[in-house]
Amino acid sequence: MNERQMALEALRYDLRERLQLYRTHQPHEGETAPPGDNVMDQRATHVAQELARVEQALLRIAAGEGDYCGRCLMRLEGWQLTTDPCATLCAYCEARPNDDV
Image (cartoon, rainbow, N blue to C red; front, side, top):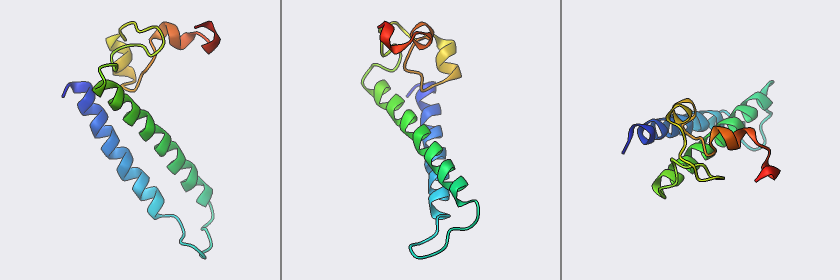
């Protein structure tokens, strides 16, 4: 397991813990939601989306595709993966609209 995978695994663990925390603070059926409850829902949604990104990145790595751009297949730059370990596009493709493929 390389450094990036270890960082992603640690992030996945943290996100799962946070998601569980947000979900356990939800009111049970028939209870009134506390004021500001929508904030917890928004946080849970954001964490779930980030968790999905991390899991997708880990799947791409396991398939041998994690170091390559998902659009042009060029190798992703090290600085880009350090900045965003879940990156799926190179900087060039990231800057281009989808219809320029």
